[in-house]
Amino acid sequence: MARPEVVTAARGWIGTPYVHQASVRGAGCDCLGLLRGVWRELIGPEPEVVPPYTMDWSEPQGDEALLRVGLRHLHRKPPGDEAPGDVLLFRMREGAVAKHLGLQARTGAAASFIHAYTGHGVIESPLSLPWRRRIAARFAIPTEKT
Image 1 (cartoon, helix red, strand yellow):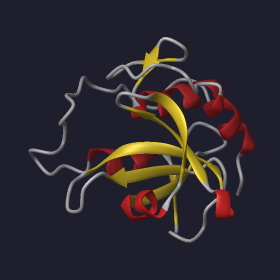
Image 2 (cartoon, helix red, strand yellow):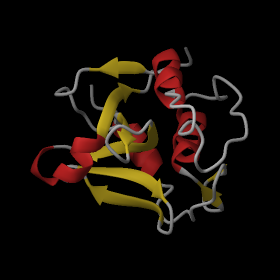
Image 3 (cartoon, one colour):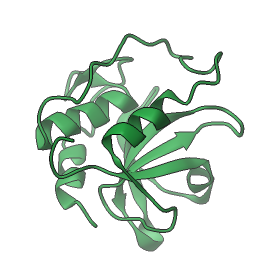
């Protein structure tokens, strides 16, 4: 199911600088912070407290922390079922833990997603084949707090 309100909220964050662990529109956020901010805008308080994390978090242990949290609070979708507003969880390298997040903005030939990217801040990027290959999971944001 398309969630245009998710895309509208996420686009409101475009231009926010990349700041590790932050989640404040216009001031700074990372990829998780973008999702947290959109959640607060659309649903309300975050479902759990996010502990401090390092830039390489989860990697040394091989811990799929974001996947587990996604399974707790979002609705997992099959790979081919894409819609605007979906949460995308990426593996940045083959065999690495999934630890980058984005929100799908457009589908089809001009597919795109919004994400906070180191050195760029919050941007909308084409969901090109190299990015598609990195998708580890796709989720829908619930319409209300779970």
